[in-house]
Length: 184
Image (spheres, rainbow, N blue to C red):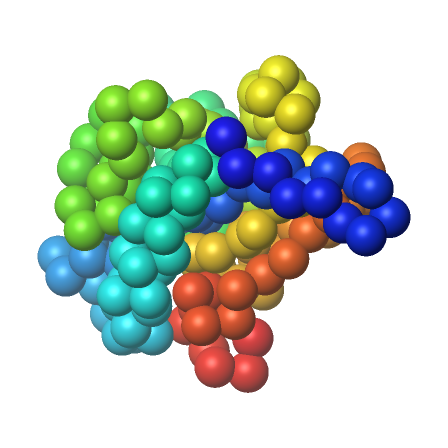
């Protein structure tokens, strides 16, 4: 595994985090595409992200993937918990988005995880909330998280902030992240 030593003597052990590059959000024919969302900006980062993943693999930097999934039954929908939260896009349009175990819910073919790449299944915006992500990172000594993927202003940012707040150094690759709105 790749490490670097800073002039201070601190050892940096990075990992690349690929956030939610799933068919349902990114692919033509995925849920977001079917409900008319503009997914062009998501697809534009695929070549840069693919290049970055290949670089990390060549340098023996671990690559972690996250997949945001929902249950077909809807048991995990936030309005089942919150009393005043407005209905999600999925609930309003009655379109299941990234259902666990479906094509929609897995990472796009162009960036597909390899057999031993860890995939963090998440139910909320943060890769850290109610997942094994932190334990996995600690078990291999990672202390720098390099974030990529979508949506920059939601899942990427929430995961980055949570990682920083629990003690990780964090970075974001601006041309390997995207939102549906360029301002985000």
